Length: 557
Picture (cartoon, helix red, strand yellow):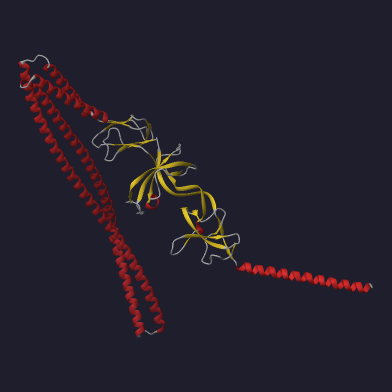
């Protein structure tokens, strides 16, 4: 009985083992099948459709300036008497920055005040009792005023002729100085060329000796070799000997030529170098002469121009004096009311002249018309300014970044757009707003970049001590932004050939690809706004290739 039970138990255990083995074989096969099927499924990179802030911007580098500058141009004809400010100094509106010479205007003002006092006295006389003796005196005054006017007009004509003459003489002097400079430069080039020739001839002679020596050595070696192989008198021997003799003669001639070149160099080098030095000195002297001629021309012209101006003012004063005298004398031929009216008109004319002269005297006080900082001052006390000299006061009320935007960027920039500003070397960001856009796109005449540029100004709304006029700064201008935009990566957006429609490949929950058309909005370098076609949380294929088709199954890589 025990043996029977043992046999039965052994039989059951064998069946169980066989069943377990069978299950394992099926599981392994299924796993291998699944792996084989997965290997056939394309692996893709997925990107999520998300919501968040989307911002498109452009960064351009510019210079920090102020929104208002007080620029005072200095006239070369007005001498600077004193300078009351320096570069970098803070000034207030109305502060006197420099004082110009107004001596002539002050003299004219005193004369006009005297004439006005006389005119008022005449008016007082006209409104009181008059006498025949006074009438005779006024007629004499008219005659004297007429003579004074003729003299003033003659002096004015002479001053104009003198101005033309001085201008012609100075132009001739400048022209002669320019010719002398051209001649000196030509002499310098000739002397330099002669020096170069001496050095070149010596170098050529040295090279000729080296070449002749090399040829001689070759011919001698060849001749020594021939003598070992051929007897004297044979053709080979004779030819080698002739070549050797020719090389020896050429070497002697080259050495002789070198001696001659060395002799010529030694005898001429000192003189040639001295000639170059003399020519250089002549050029410098001619340049100084030209500079002096130009400086003298400027000074002579300013003085002659001032003389013309003085003569012209003298003519005006004489005309006013004559008019005053005639008005005073004309009371004998006109009614009392007409005489008084004419004299009042004369007083008004003189008063206007005095106001004008007072204004010109005041204009000699160069004042700041804004609060700010002096950023440029070319005025020098006791000197006449040069053409283009200025005094510049930069206002501190508002700092701006002035930049040049390309045509491609400027078409998207609008007034009022916000900007983030970074001053070079400063670890801080400032806020800004586009406040001005140029109406003209211009090409640079000095830069190799020939694209048309538009001038744009961006205000800095929160400046501090690190914001300095003249510094460079980067302005990141926000062209468009949305706070809660539905968006997807730029690489996921595809464009359909033929229709131009935009689409993405959406991967559903079963990993099946679905071609989905979308409408897009703001585009940045990384993401694109989706206006329709997608919902938040969907997954799309990023940068799909041609193997991706609608309806296929994929897996995430």
